[in-house]
Image (cartoon, rainbow, N blue to C red; front, side):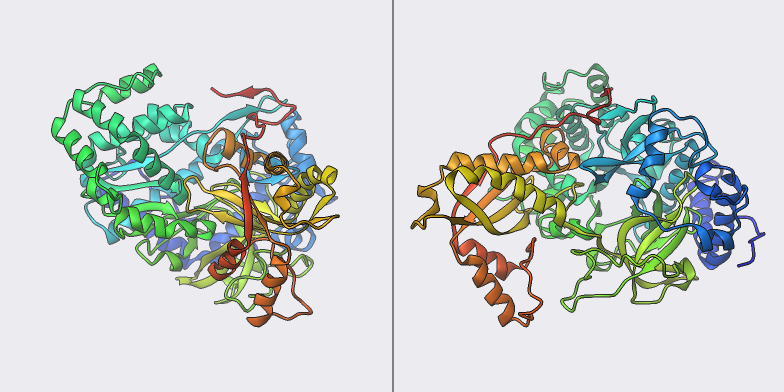
Length: 620
């Protein structure tokens, strides 16, 4: 491959000119980088390799020289466990250029886990510029479909999470916490298209109750100005509406009197809210009238009457929340604007008003160098065979460049970033859905191997099996064991929770398992499972309150035989049948639930503390 000599297209300047001029430059930028996607990608890789030529990871005996041809020939495709030793050295304070020539400024903690702990993704100061660039493209695109968004505000529920400090003194925190705490967000210049109802102080408050309450109070006070509402994930937005269901009377009282609930004690939060809050009995009457009705259907459009859309992620596992969002909003458009992760910000949705099932992301070629590992397609049931089993592990095959992917094919995303990831498997499975100029567009199919997810948590089949094995030890004194199990992510309840179905075998048969094993033992099994799950899940239970207590349902003996019969009667091969470790299909859930003899919940939250066991923590 010849080295690219052309420069990258200039980034649109977000500080110069009118809003219309800024939007025009942003749209021109998208046109330019997608029209010349191949040249841009080659230049990005050249820049990354040139800047990091002498870092330890890239040497590989090449005396500091690595062109793109050599890179593709010699650099392995890796997963997190492959780079973890390098990451650990940086985390422990090694200052040498191990992965990146620029100093690692902090670690971004991924929702994916390794050994039960969050993965640490290295990042640099300049990566914030790249993230800000992608954010700057969102409203110019949106304004093409819904003009006039500069005439009002957005009510977004945004939160920071706990931080920890590595032994080497670097912060480790989620990517959005990093962004919200950065000057790029806190000191952002005035933009009429990006005005929020929530003051920065309410977003940056680490007390989740005070943050949620104060953001709602401001959002209600400014409800007449709200044109769009949202959160990061659909689950988070629904959790916010559930908060309103239990706090509307307190909130309306604050609005009626112009005072703040005494439970809100953070002085910065109180002052920022007081700058907005004024006595408004008429608004308080409206809130009380709407919230005291017998139904919450359409509550969003009833309280925020000028709302044009809901901005949340509803792709992947978040699609399970679409019916609930439709119920609360009376069918307002659900908009997914961008595709990003802790590893890298990837791309944007150029058709934001599309049906949620048709969301397609255009990868912006300047974000990173993108390659794609071809996969084997679907399992014949309408979803990717790689979502619930290990994706194709043959990484010795040649990866496919961004512009060479084929329409309708599925790939695993592989990235090389400016911050020190080289041919790194992100774990996202994407399907090519179309093209914008010469840049492909992708549907997000699934996260590889994830079988259970409520919020940002992810549990795979191996982790679930280990948790079941650990919990089942509690049955040994009773001469019992687990003969089969499966699971389900229940999102009907708010917050959602994991449901585990167990079929129990006893040494001495009895008419009812409950008569032999006390219910407290099954509750202990629930807690044992939660203690065995990863730190992201446990944080969701303990700190974020985004996940409810794990539920265990004990089914009659022979239930899983009936499950197999159902599968065989619907076309499964008896030679290839395996008990599914996660179920979603309504008839299967009905079958399982029809044979439940009892159910139990985890009696308390599992243990969780911020950071890693060996690290000191910093929650400020």
